[in-house]
Amino acid sequence: MQINSKLPHIGTTIFTVMSALAREHNAINLSQGFPDFDCSLNLMELANKYIRAGFNQYAPMPGTIELRERVAEIISHCYATNYRPDSEITITAGATQAIYTTLAAFVHPGDEVIVFEPAYDCYVPAILVHGGIPVYSQLLAPHFAINWADVRSKITPKTKAILINSPHNPSGTIITKNDLEELEKIISGTNILVISDEVYEHMVFDGQTHQSVCTNTALKAQSIIVSSFGKTVHTTGWKIGYVAAPAKIMLEFRKVHQFLVFVVNHPLQLALAEFLADKENYLELKNFYQKKRDLFLKLTSASRLKPLKTSGTYFQLMSYSAVSDEPDTDLAVRLTKEKKLATIPLSVFYSQKTDPHLLRFCFAKKDETLEKAAEIICKL
Ligand code: PMP
Ligand code: GLN
Image (tube, rainbow, N blue to C red; front, side, top):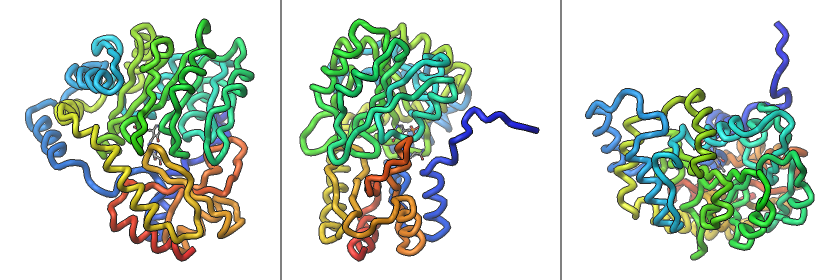
């Protein structure tokens, strides 16, 4: 049988590759982004409660009303704007599904989608598989700021969407209010959809605030926001997220969603809805991760690796130029095998495999894991 691949140039995601390598070589895993500590016991008990209470059949297609109402409340509390739980919020099987579904619902063959590089790895394959064309705009190290003149120069009659991500994976940078205004100027009067990946929305540090696209009225009208509970309550393995968008956009999203996954895990949605009634369970996250970031930076301050500024996410970039001139993928593999420390090389987030000699470290780890990792880093 001959297979005419729809994704001939796509291999296995780097996160799977590096986590498998870390396991094989018994290395500390600061590569794939996930906590090595558990979620709250209270949340586990709520999950247990709803499973035992018999919520084990299909949830409503757009998600349980309890969780959609909770999402509306969180958005209203954090960003002072309202989405209707009935028609403007849908619960998804994580952010990856939400992004894929959005692209499936909106991208026609030949449509262009503007993507910023370095780009989180699920964006481009989901554009390509629907016959879309990724159009790249570069975020340059060390600040990884958006070059709006470049974005403007890349808008064509075929531009269907602009995919933004703040706080940004892998760089840990955040967009500003001014960035939202620039984006507004570009899309006003067009049919361009903004897909805004805000999965790290509750992890913004140093007193800065997350600039959600929904805080800008004009942008909100043309945007779909994607978020994920996996990041917020330390349950990446639950794969539950959500999208929020004006009803007209959500209607199209749900047309695809209902046939892609139909519904999402029922008892866990109810557990999340109850758990997030306590605002501390998401508002405290930024302090929690700022402490982790600061600990990691302190522990590695004597290292020859040089940290870049992380304003959000649970990732820290470090330049290894003073240590090695190897390609970053070779170095990441060698560090895992020889030094027992797994990281993510930055070049994998670029279509041309640009290599700015940076490694990404995930600091969503127990303090003792960070201490052990730092010992290795300080010896490099
Ligand atoms: N977007 C970004 C920027 C991410 O880092 C991730 C994963 N951590 C996702 C989307 C996917 O989230 P989920 O696990 O909920 O699918
Ligand atoms: N988003 C996580 C990261 O950037 C990993 C998620 C995944 O493995 N797909 O590391």
